[in-house]
Length: 390
Image (cartoon, rainbow, N blue to C red):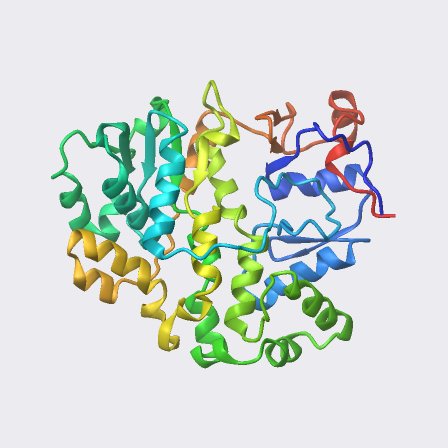
């Protein structure tokens, strides 16, 4: 298989709307099949195996996988800012958090911290509070959802002088364009195997320590699929034995960008919009290196409340909320995604996809996207986004 008109400098796909992307596939005469919110594409067997893995791990898979190993022919040219590399350094959690904060503080004067109230976002705010020499550079963006999840922490934040706190509910998210970069808790789930209660409720917690081959075979016994998984898992540089380790590898390698991309709706209407404005805190080399040799500590004792226990203890060591660290479990915080959808609708920001240079691909008649309209607007200008399935 070969790419069509693919140039080194050509912008790649960063974000898309599935309902419209099906129309793009039809425009290129590429056959596809929907698997929940994912798209299996005719002619891309190995890519479709990645979709199958996602279906095994999730009862409602979403977010099309993006192969960071760059060994799988994908139907679309996705932007991969950080291709997979086997970690060569071992960091502690505190070292990884400090290094990540230092990386981001070196890029912009103003740092907007998106705090949902969950474990990942609370930990990243905690890291910045500890390692930012000038807290006046920090702006914490929160909403009522944040306070529902962790009401004590907001009062804790109010104790810090020069720390700006902004409630983004009401009209703020519609009327304000904040300066600086926006740091989210994305990447935390994926780097820590994206464990979810629905999976544990279906299969039981002990499945996490079972051999992945036995578990996969029960779900999908195709010999070519199992052989593909063996080859793909070997690219991690580790011997993947258990279901937990397989989850870590799949989500770390294929899904670290997906949920982050959905939040771009919140920012796409900004005058000076660029995808680099939005930064997933945990999608980084230091945190990935930290967890690489500690996969078996992701959820001690196969107990869901222990998932991310080291992150929770990291927070409690600084803020003193020991009960939160012991009992807090994952809550799906969709505040920014929902605000983004509302903002997109109210601002009439209709688009098919966003490219890595910030370009929004739009047509006047969305979501109809007729063949005549698309040919008139783009002709073959987007060919570089597609790989040839023949």
